[in-house]
Every structure is written in C-alpha cells, then in structure tokens.
Length: 156
Image (tube, rainbow, N blue to C red):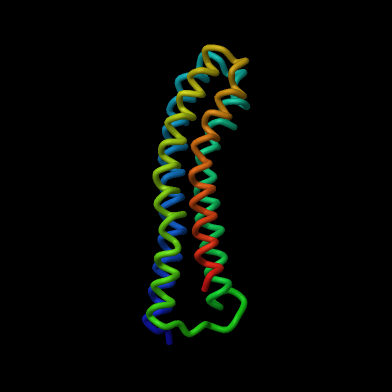
C-alpha cells in the first residue's frame, strides 16, 4: 500500500512526464504548420525541415528521463517500493517543477523559433543550419532546468 509521501512523489513523476511532452507537442505542431507551407513549393527541403520540426520534441525526452530516474529510485521500476515521509514525497514533487514547467514553456517557444527557421529555410535553403542553431538556443533553458531538477533530486 502506498503512503502519502509516495503519492506526492508520483504526482511529481506525472508532472515531469506530462508538461514537457505537452510543450513538445505544441512546439512541433507550430513547426509542422510552417513546414506544411514550405514543402508544397519546395519538397526537396523535406529532410532539413523535418530536423528543424523535431527540435522541440526534446523537452519530452527530458521529462521522461526525470520520470524514469524517479520511478527507479522509488522502487516502482526494478526494486522494492520505497516508504517515503510526506516531506520526502513533497521533495520529489517540488524537484520536478523546474524540468516540467520550463519544458512546457520552452517547447512552445522553441516551436515558434523552429517555425520561423523553417520559413527562413524555405526562402533560402542555405540558412537551414543557422535556423537549427537559433531553435536549439531556446533549449538551453530546458537543459538548465533539467540540471536543477537532477541536483535537487541528488540531494535527497
């Protein structure tokens, strides 16, 4: 039977595993809409456009990584189920907030930049790599948030 601390930790898992993927889905949809405008006129740019569209998808990976780390440490995956105090459960919950919230927001904004990069690539295909770099810059915030979440997680 799960105690209150475990329930709070699992809420943290759910938040980490949900908000980043939502940001990724919205961001990739924005980029996909831009791709749909470019590809009918320039189908030869499909490979470049697809890579740019995929960039906002990484926020989902970070959320999944945190969820997998939590589930392993909690004993849900491959171990004995941990017994947590309420304080420990809340620690898991609050530690998941940086990666979850920043994943949601950065995924959406990375999608906006990726959409612009796709439009730019449609106008001048030699600018595709520059567009990828511009979109990837938004992701640095998510990497920092992941680092904060992991550092908090390692402290308990």
